[in-house]
Image (cartoon, rainbow over all chains, first blue to last red; front, side, top):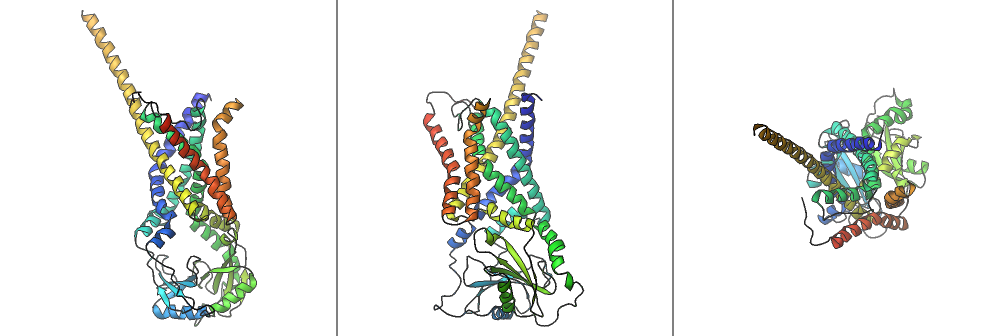
Length: 391
Length: 67
């Protein structure tokens, strides 16, 4: 293929991949912008730390007591998950639902004080501006189909970046890096800005785009883990009788888990019958303490009747890959300055998408004007010819 | 041939390597590692702003703009 032909091919690829994904990518960039700062926005909304001030050395209530009080507040509901939010120290969150196998969006959250064992707050996470931003960003309110579709758009976006890279070389061959021609025409100015913004955001765009795609596969990852490791771990209980009566102690489950995984902290407990465990076990997920190992979780299965640890394993690589890819997508792993950088890159991406769209229109217009000029001159020639013939 | 490649891709490659270091640095640690990520990822931001400001200054007056 000649080099002109090659450039034309990459141009077509860049044009079409961009046209396909631009509208969705614009939506993702715009909804993603407030999501970067969700913690700061929540703080601005005037939510202080929830936990009550207690004298130093006050003993914490047991987890069983917290569970009892949560159920007292919501007597018709069942607990599905218990988790700890590192941004809300000295609190424990209980996620309660109408039944153990209710749909995922059927839940009420009760945030409990670790010392006083009272329900501090029952925030509704399924309303408000940030919820709409988040849900649009994840699946456009269309469930797993919308989610996987956005994943596909992410892949097309990466193809647009790659084809853009292939065009950058030939375009910039005779020019210096960072050139912005403002005096020639609006189209050239935006072409130069498109190229400059595009080339400095390549690595960020590919990493954030690709980790976003990985996140859209979370249901698939969960399914693979359930079919694989989880079913292996729970195989001995396959034909066991359903659980009846009172479950074993949560505090005991934590003690057993900590003993089996020294130096790790519990981050979530899944109740028997939820998708993250068997019908007979609590699954206690523990995480490490360093910035990297706190992304890698490990499940311990505790028989919820006999209160014994039956199995504990490292997660398969694809689950770890999902969890490690999340901060790289969210930008929430390096303090506020990193979030500001994330926002600037996000805005740069919006400019790239907008200018790309403009360039497509402007190019179309330029091509049409060119054809019109050709037509016009042709008509003129014909008219002159006709006049000459008639003369 | 080789010199053209580096003339076009020199700065973008440096920016790409610094971005990659920055993206992964904050993932592996706190404190110093965060600082590294702010500086390395801040570099492309600074370069872009520098060229945008430079563009304003070098704009030659007196030439008609065509649209």
